[in-house]
Length: 610
Image 1 (spheres, rainbow, N blue to C red):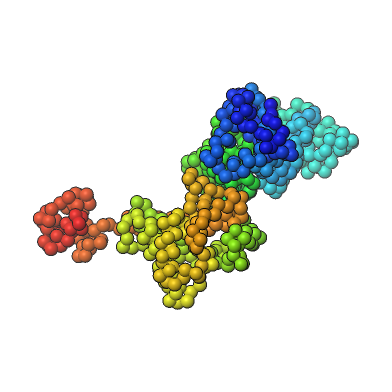
Image 2 (image 1 turned 120 degrees about the horizontal axis):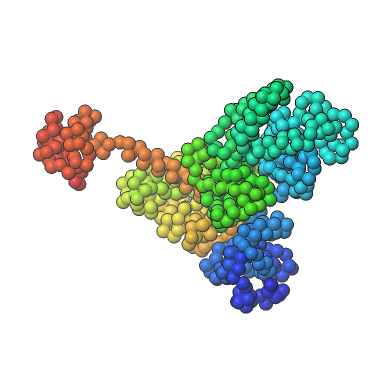
């Protein structure tokens, strides 16, 4: 089913009237017939109707809808089938509005053939053309070759190509160094080789303990039948597998998991994948999917899992930093595609939580390095110059943000970015004092007065662009402070106001000098730079606020009363049984505590009641 081919004649109302309410996949095309977006839905009619709600859609969606000239539908029996078809079409056509991963050749894997009587075990990278099992993806080629080296030592499966295998008349060097059983010349029976293949497959699936138990049984049977040479070989295999299991062991309750964490910032998303196989950490890798503007971490992870794991043999468990969109559907689709159950667990506990946190830290580090790269910074600064109409890219950008909890321990942050990225030595925090709790305007005014008042007195550096995390009110206060200091024309003040749903990519920029609003597209490098600076100011403010709040809460409220030292504090708390009972006591009751005079008792009473 499709709409008309003329872009201007596309009538979504007529199209939706004919759309079925069944699971399926939809493809949105432009006037030239190029696929713009591929999506799946449990109910095609309802899902497609959500794109045509006028002003209630995200800017990225609105841009997509404005280019639609045709929509093609493919109905499926189940939503799982729709998910598999969607993933295939995304990889085939790589639409510009879909979240896109790198192509298949980026992911090294281990291949175990199934079509040959004596399956080959080897390194693989690229499309899956040969029938067999593909284990991975692994973080890098080193991890694959390290695992293959172990498997050849223990299970002694061939790694030669089929033509070489068919034309051999004597064993190769792999047999001589005891890394192959030489099936090419009939030194091992088909049944024995198949058993080794099965054990290697179980090991790659993370079930090494099951392999060890089976080998122990075979060793005992061989010893009972006086086959001591075979028993010794099995003993050596068991020792090697146990050594591997004991080395670099982590608690994974199943042996093999992938740990995925998504971090966003500066208009960019990073997904870090830690690969753990049979308790061995094989390392991690950072991925930067495209077209993630306006999407949350769960949506990015859902797209990543779908594109990376649906056509591979995933581990039985994925640990994730955020619950992916439609997690149950992904689990079902992964299970059907791989032939075994796959569990996606968000917010794990204990040791697993530490692995997720490690992945998150690595993702943050990789994202920070990518955003701070010289090429990225130059591109973004030039885009910002063009968007703001500046004569040159800004060499110094500052951003202020306020953080508090219901007015408690208010902290203002100031972060600085230069041509190379963050200038952390120039960061400043301001502990805000003597304001009405929760008054963000007064907090911003005080922070700006302290920062720029000192700059005027000491002739300190000034930014070309000053970002204020807030709307019209915050920008007005900033303008008032700068006017008082005579800096109105010295720098450009820009308010960064969040969109109605507070989602990245929907920010509105308020230009204080002209009073106009500037809405940059979600994919704009200039907006990405502003988001990066704003996010860093937000992080720096929250960190300072939490530290200040923790210090204030560790200090007893009695320490603020003159004349109440450590010894008297202990006497008061011991006498009344706690701070709450003391706060309800009268002056006479407090004065009855040894060492507390009537005057001091009055001060203590006033502290709690005034």
